[in-house]
Amino acid sequence: MADIPRTALERVLARATELQSTTPDGVDSVSEERLLDIAREVGLDVAHVRQAIAEEQSRLPLTEASSGLLLDALGPAALSAQRSMAGTPDELLRCLDQWMPRMESLATRRRIGNRQSWEPRHDPLGNFLRASFGVGGRRFDLLRVDQVTASVTAIDQTRSVIRFDADIAGMRRTQRNQAIGIMGMLVLMFAVVATPVVLLVSTGTGTGILAGLSVFTGGVGMLAWRAIRRSYRNAVNRMHLRLEQLLDDLEQNQLREPPNLLQKVVGQITSR
View 1 (tube, one colour):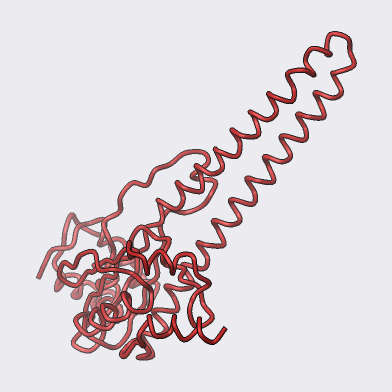
View 2: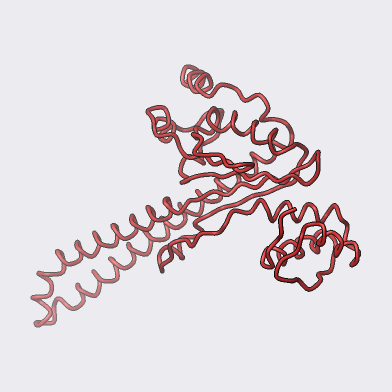
């Protein structure tokens, strides 16, 4: 079996402790069998440790997201959701591979082993869905992600851990750029309006007007920023909810035979 590095070991033991309790000291690396022996020695349920190992192995290698004052203030650049459920990695990924293109309008990006990623479709139908109100009463919230990755790791022969990781750094940069654009326009408008007022400052009559313009511009800028940040966080919440809903449906076998997306689109349009 593959060795588990110390950093991963600490997270595995922490998760196993969360499922039961207590953590031993780690080493530089340890085999999976040795870790199970340690778990038995300290009284941890082996089934919980197997699940914790599967959850750790389903984690994507973390990449450093762009940072900055505005980017950090907007919110996270990635989302994740995971759950253990009945099914083998092949079965669960097969269900998702049928569902994602047809019901989420996401195209397969690549698959390596028990990990598969999807990205928004870049065709006329995908562009139409991005501008639509959704199908079946829901929005296509995942169409704004850079990519969604599903990692499935077997716990035993009948159960697996599935983890979704959604990269939304592109959407966050877009929102940041919109905020910068609005601020720039406000500064330009202030400069245009304030220039003739500055000529009156020396006489004392323009001081109050200039102060009022400054307060007004700053207030509008703050309101615009708060609206952009609220819009971004609402979108993030909807995306995270959609990932959880996918896990719900997958766990309840609702993704086994997905309906045809185009048929639902046509049916919704004709019913209006």
